[in-house]
Image (tube, rainbow, N blue to C red):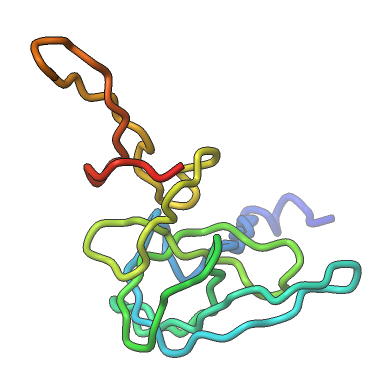
Length: 151
């Protein structure tokens, strides 16, 4: 316990909190260039092949490992992706994820995901369009791209 005179000479310094997402530097997302894409296995009770990529941030040239959410990552070397924070519990050391379906970036959204669409970059699946067929208004179901939905 410091004395009163010690406190007058040297004030108590506040301890800075360590940031969990240091590579993002306070930004919500950052652009990155893909270096390599590979698969890893999770920690002990789980077993799978998790899709992971090693990327280099464009603004700071830091190299980090990111998780690719969803099925079938179509990510290749030198592709530009958008990175956000969010750790994967069963992959140690991986604290970032790739944003799917972001405009101007390589990783597209997953088509025909009806739940948790914002996580996988899926557009609104069905749009109802009013069509006049022989003078009668009918509702026709279309997917986002304008082609008829496959059943």
